[in-house]
Length: 398
Image (cartoon, rainbow, N blue to C red; front, side, top):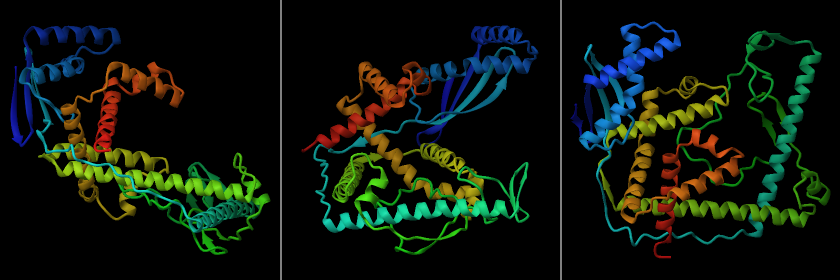
């Protein structure tokens, strides 16, 4: 028996009582599992095992009974347990109704682009500057490490490397040469990066390496065939070939940038003809995903989300508030694309899903069955649906 209690617009609780012979059979099966595992047959263990084995089915069957379509994963609360039944509360958001206006007149327009000789020369200058900086920083680190070792000032401990009596944990980027606090390289979660192909510092400038506190002076070499050969770029051995290489790179960068700008304009126009009231729980679910992505990125730099927040002087509540507009836009965009896919029947076939698995297997050098374990078919199907819908919208009025 299940009932839906709406708490807010498209949000609420689904209360389910699971009892009778189904609950009795679930407990018997749970007892058999516990016996085989050599675990204690206590009431709590039996109830927990029975629920773990049946919660997914209880949720799915109750949704079907009430004809509900969830938009978020449920929060689960066990309200009551008796010898004859268990009462479970599932709290989640429902998929909101989406009203689409006329999207048939949308246009996907990619602006023309060219790369001038001046831009090519500037690109070459930036490339050479950055390469010189990287080489100087590497040499400075190596020299500083040698000097520290020669001076006998490096001591080891269980927790890391101690320099001058101050302890620092070694990071993946190399030896820490000072006790300065590291700053996370990651930007704000959900923020977009700089669209420029390169950014340069003045030539022959003194540079401060934030990671090592080693000051280096950069001298950029002359552009010659020998310099180009030293880069070891396949098929590029002369100055003229290098200019062509840089120009092609900048051309591809501009093309990608203009395509992204055109997609953003297309999505903005689509949202302008989309009406939907988004449940707060859907936005919070998207923010949770964004925070997990940020935490994973920070972990690669040996930084925790807590450290990140402290270094940026903000609380998690403030970060959630900051992420809210981007998260809401993402949810709104997904709902709009889903509505177009439904209206135009743009769902991928089983053969298309299998074809995508084969393509991913080649791309990631993995077995198809291995991929299916980490990426369920419904996830692959949803991604393909979004792509087909984007392609459809781009094709309008071409």
